[in-house]
Image (cartoon, rainbow, N blue to C red; front, side, top):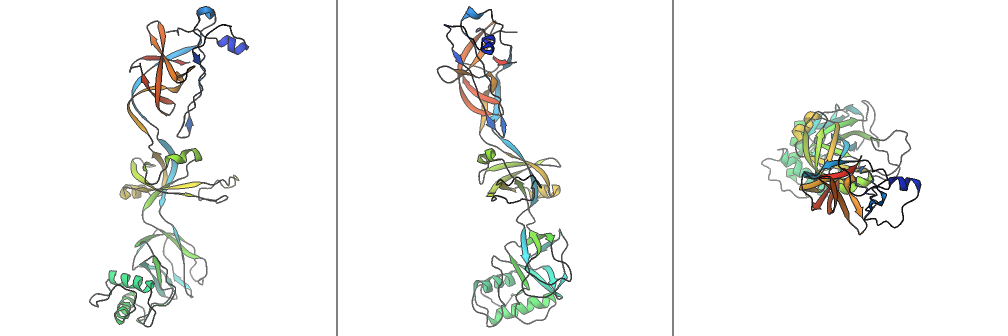
Length: 379
């Protein structure tokens, strides 16, 4: 096995004594590379130049080949696939629940969400919840415009020449009657408060049903709906957050196999004491967590997997065609910088190198070193 040209003073360091008048060319190295939550082990490598300590037992070491390839500072975080944007629905008005949807059912705009006193409550698309009855004599407002957009889109205003504005006109009342006739309810031309639920999505999935049949309307949520799209959710450690940048790219590995590309949409930090769905359940850990949401490019593949565990990989810096060595091969030099011991026949030579990317306990180096060279590492 090749030996280093500089004998070790391992025994001196262990006993607390060291030979005098010796010139050290390499200082101990302590290099910690914390990448992806895994840290490279620190290495302390004292080497001595003088042959006057040749009688000391040599430091046990091995060699490794300098490789050429790609190095990436990507990290992997365990997460899960879940349906996006869960939203609780609170019923308006008064009455008794006479029909409720099944969990997992999908309701499109114009469809029935649930039923109160035998009358359907319909989903429509809009950002503003209704807060009043809308009919002839109703004052102008953006809620009227929102209703008219839906009536036109659902086909109940065909041939009426209704303008998309904030005025409740005679034509609007006619369109409302057409809509009511299609639902099989009394045709009054007035939309009563509580008969429509406005949501931004044009299609929702019933995520949870909280109400009971026969129970009266109250202030609590009737049900919770979500988007029909799946997203990946992760809660990275604090030292991993810098890798998760809005609009950054990610790869989601599915539990059933295969992967889906995605994009980081949001990072939301919960307050102290908030308990997430994946809480530890009694561990007492109330530290803030940051929830990262990743939208997925291929919904068909994601939906085949369904809500399930997943592993999210976020790619950081990448070095291609790089010379790579383990970080334990690096030596901290007295004059600053780093070097490696290159094995040349029966001798070693110290070569100063420049560091590039450091990841996964490996380092990119440049200098008087080439691919295939043998460098010394401790055993």
